[in-house]
Every structure is written in C-alpha cells, then in structure tokens.
Image (cartoon, rainbow, N blue to C red; front, side, top):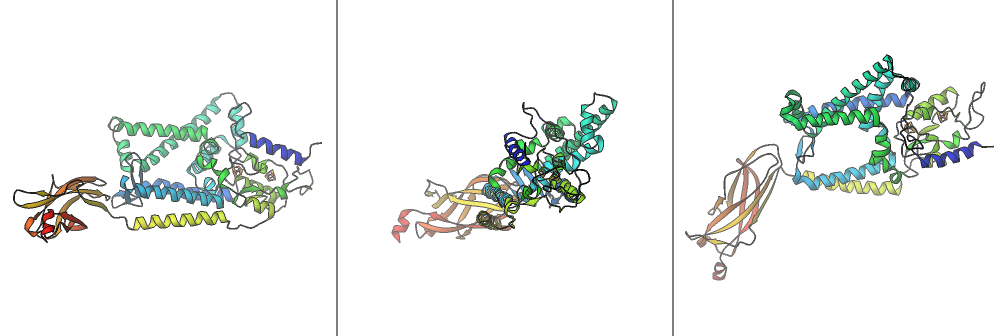
Length: 476
Ligand code: SF4
Ligand code: SF4
C-alpha cells in the first residue's frame, strides 16, 4: 500500500522535473488562484497602496524645477533625488550598481524572496490591481474556471470584455507612468497634449508599452516571475539553509491526512491535506513539496493555512516565514559567515560611493599643456604656451565660463575661439594660450595658476606650468 511518505517522496521528484504551470505536453496550465484573505494579505494590500501612490506621484515631484527621479537611459542622463548625473559619472553609476547588486544578494541571503512578495511592481500590480479587478468581475477561482469553460454567450462576452477594457486602460496608465520615469513627465504631457504626429516616437512608445503591460498582466502573469525574472532564477544560488523563506513545517505537518467527519484534529500530522495552500498559490505550486524557485513569497498560503489551523484548533504557522534550519532543527535566526562577508563588502562599497559623492563637484575641469608642444616665440618677443581645457558642466544651469590667468599677474591669457557658454551636462574641449614676456621668465619651467569662473564666481583654480626657452635656465 502506498504510504504518505512514499507519496511525498514521489511528489518531490515530480515537482523538480516540471513547472507547475506547464502541462506534460508543454502547454500553458492557466492558474486560477483562490482569492486570498488574511492578515498578511491585508498588510500587503495596505503596503501596495502606499507603494503605488509613491510610484505614481514621484514623477511629479520636482526639485528646483527638475524631476526628483529620472532614468533617461537613451540620453544617459539620470536625476537621483534632484541631483543630475550624466555620462561623466559612469564610475559612480558602476559603483552604485555593484552596491545595489551586493545589497540584493545580502538581502536575499537573509530574507529570501521577500521583495518579490511585498514590493516587486510585477506582484503589486498583478495581485493588488489586476487580480482584484478579475475577482470583482469574474468572481473567485471556481467561477472563473466555470466562465472559461462556458461557450461564448452574452454574459461571458460582457465580463471578458469589461475586464479586458479595464485592464488595457490601466496598462495604458502604467505605460505613461513608466515613461515619466524614462523620458520625464514633461515630455509625456507634451505627447498627451499635442497631436501624435508631433511626437511620433513617443506616441508609438506609449502604445507599445501599453500593449506590453496589458499582455503581461492579462496573459503572461506569473510566467514573468517563474520563467523570465533573472532575480527569481538566482534564488538557487543565493538561498541557503539559514535564509528566511516561506516554508511548510513538514515535521509538524506530516504525515498529512484528511480530517474525518467528527474528528477535531488529524490523528496524524497537522496538515489535513485540504489543498487550500495550493489552491491559493498564484504560481500554482505546492509549498508542501519544499522550497521552490517559483515561490514568490506572496504569503497567501500562510494566511490560508493559518485560517485552517484556527478552525481545527491547531497552532498557526504550519506554513510560515522560517529558515530550513529553523524547520529542521528549530534553530533561531543567526548571522552566518556568508552574511558577514557580504555585509563587509557592502559597507566598503557604500563607504567608497559615499566618499565619491561627497567630493563630487558641479564642474569637472582639466587643464593640460598641449602634449607635444613646448613653447612658441611670438614676433613681439613674448613666449606663448598652448593649453587644452576640458570642462564638464554637471549642473542643470547654463554657465558662461571665464578663464583668467591668476598668477603671475603680468602674463596674458587668450582663449582660442568663442567665449565658452556651457549648457547643462555639456562637455566642452577647447584651447587657450598663455603669453609671458621673455624678459620676465627666470627659469625654463614657471609655475602658473589659472582661474575658471562661472560669471564672477570662482569655480576652480588650476596649477600648471609654463615652459620657456632653455637658455633662460642656462643663463641663471
Ligand atoms: S493549507 Fe495547511 S492544512 Fe491545508 S493542505 Fe496546506 S498545509 Fe495542509
Ligand atoms: S507557495 Fe505560498 S508564498 Fe509561495 S507563491 Fe505560492 S502561495 Fe505564495
């Protein structure tokens, strides 16, 4: 006779060999998750309200007339907390990216996939917006199944039509919000308020993203988490026995067995095999098989199982946030050497990034005597040197730049070409000459000081050298 233990062992083999949402012949198995309820679901609903509000209002927040957050990948311009960053800040960008990756690794090693369940935009939109609308229009899982199985009729047409129209309107709205972060809210407003022909590429982008979001939330759904998301795929290497995950306490739950009529509690393990934790799962998995990559930590199974445990007078948390060591050996959370190592790396990275940000200036200025050129003797007896000036305006402001020879005062500085007016985020490379009286030079290499000004405001003083004829040096 097949025991529960052998069944579980067989299940374990089976679930590792196939995706819960794909049939044996490779077709999509549509998931009809039961409508979740419970304290975690309520907490997630409240949090998602704040997250969505934040997501929607942030593009409208401006600091000194500029967007608070902007990720303009096309033009490689980013505004973080009102501070502009451009291509010249690439080193900061790389360092920030590495810090974020290490933070994600550390966070995942400690807390598993908690971000996916509570804060990932995919989960928040799917579970808290689209799925709620679906439950409202089509009913709970059983009604949805029934409706899908029905022949097309006026009721089905109305429900499906209404749902998909609302889905597309929301996807259309999300596309606008998404583009507000990428091309700026001002440009999105221009695209909306002017004829499509005036902003054809922007208009096409809005339509394309609307269709993509609609397709993702109406059809693709959990596949984004289980097949596409690289973070999900990395769980296998990031999680270990001490990571906090959503886990089924098989020691308490097994051997599972149905509760017979009249019994108050199962005579076997605490799991009464009601299947509700599976029915409610948006990725269609059975958490009782063990930790699986498809689990997005949505907590729906915890809520469902807690309600069951309450009904049968058993302690809650048969499914809970715990580590595998916590389940197996009842060990409490501990800081492992791996966590320590990642923490140290993160502190170092954040320290370096913080230092670089603190010394970051509004302008980056480089003055170099033009390589390969020594000095030139002018017909008027003066000696000149040519210098290369490279100046980057990292601010939002247009800056008229003045260059002065500060020291020695009796020298002369001549800019090659027009006066410099730096646009925001612009890089200008130009040349200038410094001229000095030959008679005033006492040595071959004379230190000089150049002042770079924004109007009357000194931006930077640069020390460099001025080369004169060798015989001056020899004379001395
Ligand atoms: S909800 Fe709880 S009791 Fe029901 S099958 Fe899942 S683990 Fe067992
Ligand atoms: S197993 Fe539980 S926590 Fe994981 S996705 Fe399914 S319902 Fe959510």
